[in-house]
Image (cartoon, rainbow, N blue to C red; front, side):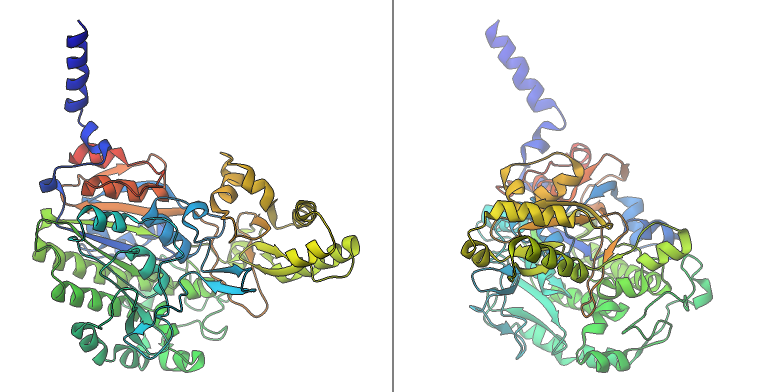
Length: 548
């Protein structure tokens, strides 16, 4: 009897359609030859609905009509940035574990702000600038691409290309064969000596085309006649700040903008960045031997989407729509090229975003009477400083503040023999009293454990000891931080798109709720490799069950 019972259990486990997929290991022949990741910074899922009738057939429409579309995926982080968002997507863990709490944070040991990829042990390859003095060493968790390299014993090829180095580096991981990004100072595509020592000839040839100088001498004009953009607000909408708080209507004079910025950075916010990155991706696909053996290769392409200028124009702007119409054309070209080169059944595409986008405060207030406003961290810190001076005596109690967190001066606190947790609690309680603050919590409470509460849980998931501040706080929905002399790309929106297409993926719409940390384990199952060691996301069983 015992023998038959064991036999029945064995048969159930091996016959169940989801059993093998959930285990994380798939027979080698079922894995795609190439994975193409399409990541868009600051992409709201509703852009697809809004612009649907203007898209062509073979770009976004092809992915959404022929792929598995997840409609309820969230990126839940204390402070959303393309750096931390990319790290979360590719590691399958939150910032509390992967350590990338933002694009920058305060380094107490050096008493200065540090950049998340900053690494003086390496140098720029491809230009005489310092943008390549970078590496993924501050990323504390393995990525799905790292595991692919380890599992294949280095035989799988892994590459990334992006307009921002943080997106390129964290999507490539530690073990990649190459990570490339746009250098706004030189206008070239560059890399770091962490990844490559000798710059590839084909990238050198690409840079010789001098695309940045060529595009910056042109105007950004709309793809379609402006009167056809009925899905967006008028081009001359009065509340749009525009480039440099001056220019907010088409045509956009890129020569003027790059001169004003004294770099090619404004190009990143225009469709020319999509064009440049698409052409670079095609060049890589033509020059790197992806998909030529039995080992799955992985190439991530991260597009920018007006991320630097989102607050100047906003999700409802004509500029945003035009940017996505151009991007749609270039994604269609990439999909067509890859399907022809590798075969439709041999390439797996996925589309997602590393951040979402918020509507500008002024737009929400004036058009819809939403009770939101701008929150001034500078004013809040000035008042907090006065309060701490009254309570504990005159001292520089606050060492640094940024990204909705406050770093207290530990040396001063120790000198005055004040209990650190006591002053943390006082400061946190004071911040909680500001109108725009939803909740503030001191570090010692965040270090004690985890909360499943969706609001407080966001702080727990984002707090990284020795990197995060002494106080973390969240703003109320729709409120946004505003500085006098600093521009921030802030979003409190959590919904991001996620679509899988190709390589046997069945068309379907999945409305079940998932998190950004679920992407890495899902990709791991689809590739037949172990998920990143620390990943606590769940594999999305719907596409796995239908595929295998």
